[in-house]
Amino acid sequence: MNRDNSKMRDAETQALIEALSDSLTPYAVATIVSYLQPVQTKDAGVNREVYWFSEILVEAIGGYDTQNRLAEELGL
Image 1 (cartoon, helix red, strand yellow):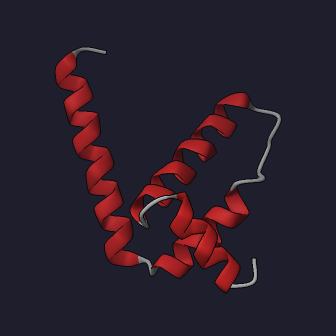
Image 2 (spheres, rainbow, N blue to C red; image 1 turned 45 degrees about the vertical axis):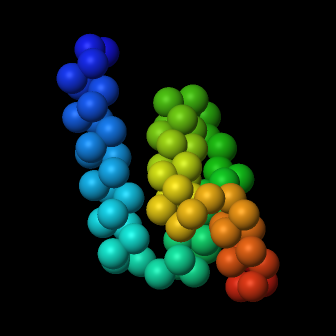
């Protein structure tokens, strides 16, 4: 991947994080991540995509400390 594509991907990822933050409460994101984290399929590519999306969601709410705190508050 050349440098320009990396910058574009970073911009796209940041836009996704902003859209998620604008659309979902931190509690909803924490719930989604809690359900996505244990997911394993027979397809390693799908597993990587789910893991990537989980990481994006966690970043959108401020990191794993926030994720863990909110999940605990929700009883997850």
